Amino acid sequence: MFSDIPVTDLTRLTLTEAREGLKAKQFSATELAKAHIAAVEQARALNAYVLETPEHALKQAAASDEKLAKGDAGPLEGLPLGIKDLFATKGVRTTACSRILGNFVPPYESTVSSQLWRDGAVMLGKLNNDEFAMGSSNESSAFGPVVNPWRRAQSSAKLVPGGSSGGSAAAVAAHLCLAATATDTGGSIRQPAAFTGTVGIKPTYGRCSRWGIIAYASSLDQAGPIGKTVRDCAVMLRSMAGHDPKDTTCVDRPVPDYEASVGRSVKGMRIGIPKEYRLEGLNAEIDALWQQGIDWLKAAGAEIVEISLPHAKYALPAYYIVAPAEASSNLARYDGVRYGLREQGRDIVEMYEKTRAAGFGAEVRRRIMIGTYVLSSGYYDAYYLRAQKVRTLLKRDFEQVYDQGIDAVLTPATPSSAFGIGEQGSSDPVEMYLNDVFTVTVNMAGLPGISVPAGLDSQGLPLGLQLIGRPFDEETLFSLGQVIEEAAGRFPVGERWWA
Image (cartoon, rainbow, N blue to C red; front, top):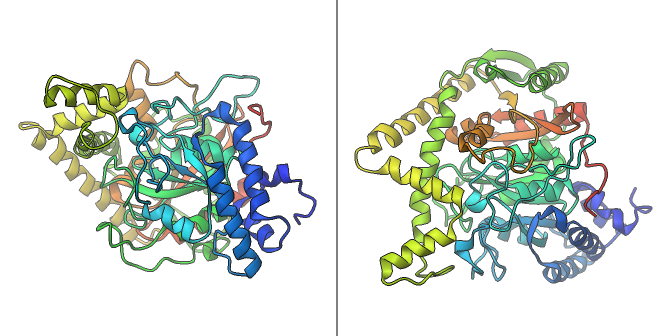
């Protein structure tokens, strides 16, 4: 299958194809790493990587070749990955793409990335993201915006890859890694996946450890993979998930063999279609795609049921109270005293003020101020407490739907395809926040959600469908996601215009 593949085209393989090729000794882990290192070097115009680690990758690949030769390979042995710059990597600069962390080099490894290295994966470098994961377009990074490898038909305008995991999604779509780690606080895995024709899954809250991941909103943040296919994400999640005593929110329950659920029959499954997601003014192409997804699942033997999530319309405003409130608390630690950037001042208060003003970008400062405001005396009950009550009602909506025998919920992933860099949010941040309208409900309720590419719009840009599952039932999402992938086909980027 692989013997005729030139080394330069090894990057076109999916993660599972590369795994099988390594096992069959069609190529070595070192050859695979070198092909990806060359692709990364040629794609710097996309700004997907904020730090390349080729020497580290080759060292890991050489160790993988030894293990493969001995027949002692791990589940991800020799497979080159990109790591979002929110995951602490021991001895390798980690900044959350913020000036305030400067050249911070952690002396520890995040639990998720340590499990990837345990299973034999190879690190190509650190991937760009919105500063502290705050954004829906990857334009707030201190390293500059990521450029989506997709372009509109007959246009060379630069498009966003979505956020905050824009570097992860762009790198996977442009074949700059076989898969990537990402995080999702309000849609930051699923929205970029939809914008780039890749697959992304946000697991159930507590499925993956948050230890060693730079925090944005601790009750919402969750790690997950972005891959080229549903199967690739299933393979990645098995290594990323698992109990961690260092994270008290991480659930102690066995990790299933997610890959075994890919291709499983979905006959008899009941799929909910929430009427509240049919928003006024919903893009006609998105609506048509949603109907197409319904037809595909019906053809595969699933039963389609209209459902109601009456509090879904309050999810977005509640999210933009809860998330900034937690951010204002989490980001208080960046003060110029212990690590990262320090600006000099006449006294400690002025040093704090100057450091935080210089270190945080505009979007992060905005969210810290919103969060501090809603937590302040006199406003806590009016905003934060009310938002938490909405969150409880939202969670109850989903529980009632699942109690009625619904196996998963199908919705659009985003309200549009990828937009141009600088096109949204420059004068009105709310315009940018509306990109999360279909995704934030999943985080607020702590549920798993997957985005699968399902078609192209009239401009030739990818669109995704989202499946929302029961708590800790990612397996059903992989089964249903595979049905959509097989019906729609895959959507690889065509021309490598950046090389």
